[in-house]
Image 1 (cartoon, one colour):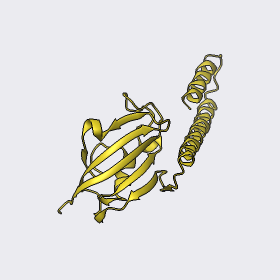
Image 2 (cartoon, rainbow, N blue to C red):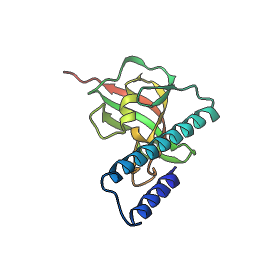
Image 3 (cartoon, rainbow, N blue to C red):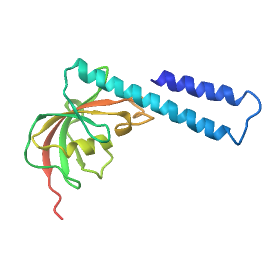
Image 4 (cartoon, one colour):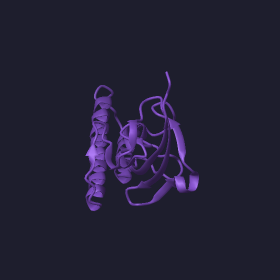
Length: 174
């Protein structure tokens, strides 16, 4: 996936050094090439995620944004909503099984739903759970760390797998 992007950028770079550039057509051509490349990368990522789920016999649902989720245990009470303060145990892996982060090492994480700096896929997924609930989420890169990764353990354009347990919800009292 990253190799395809590198090759594409190399072709664009070499092509831009080849002489005359038609200013009227070149931006459109570049835009179309970028769109096609993005579509191919997205399609490959979707295939990688589907293959991961199939290898593990995971019958996951998919949201409109592309979040894959499987509720492993129903919680009790109301589900988390925007503004709630939630505490979760988690395990984050790449599709190849590489462990990136876990609450075993870093402790439980607390954040405010839809307000704190947490991956957008986690904000979306956590609202499917009530206190005590457990789920597996697969976040496509656009719902996780995007084009740049996290500059540490998660590479650019990497889908991530979250095993998550919602330990506590403190309801937002408005």
